[in-house]
Length: 221
Image (cartoon, rainbow, N blue to C red; front, side, top):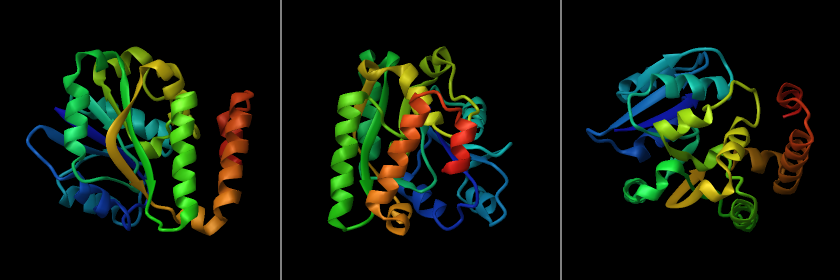
């Protein structure tokens, strides 16, 4: 079984599209790990047939709680504002079918729902970052076997860069690009400006690599 784990906090406006893109099936469960939503997120998830896990706020803690509650032997971690492209199940099945991937994790292609040429430039930069440094972010999804996930220690309850923390433990050689599009909302880039938002993200990531505690960085995010 595949368990899709989605952390949420007041995502009623975006979650329905994410859930609709997943489709469904007898060998799939959706686990919503909620951090205290007050906008109807939980009700929408329940109507869609998802399992609900309620816990402390914070994406790292919510992902860990969702994984702990999931029943599947395969886990797909996904952000609430990220829609998987058509045919995503075929891409996931192809990854799972390869026995070499039992000790690997897969990530999807980063896409933005914005026709602006700057979005295409950012997508190309993200693809290069993943190839060169093995650093896919959480908005690209992460497909991983439960046993491998547990062996790595899973997500840690840190307030920021929980995704980078995990993929660094996985390592570049054990990360596999999937033939799946992960289409993410471009709102934050449009509001802040593509250059400004990208520069801010790079500064925060650099500080993280230099050892600045994630709790401090979360205040700047």
